[in-house]
Amino acid sequence: MRVRALLLFLVGSMIAPTLGLAAPAMAAPSDAQLRSYAYALVEVDQMRQRLSERSKALLPADRIELQSEQRHQVYQILLRNALSRDRFNAISSMVDQRPVLRRKVHQFAMEALVGA
Image (tube, rainbow, N blue to C red):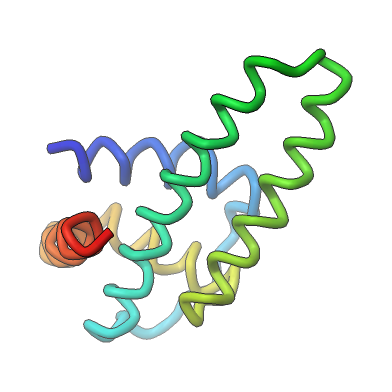
């Protein structure tokens, strides 16, 4: 259940605005791509939690720099997981629409959390 909430939060409120909503039509993702996607989601959530704690101690003007750092870290996470911004967004759209893919992402995210 936590991973489903994570997916909804990350895809709906953080990743899409940060990386852009438009995703070109692409082929269905392989299991390897879904695993990379799930691992990226987990990593982004962990990064977001760390930065959220740091932002509490900052002045509002300093939070802008933190937001820039957050965007850079999201980009680095996608690179580490062999995902382009467009591919990540395309997979996000497909996961939203296809319960089978959502279940696979959930399984891979649990795998990432257990291994973390």
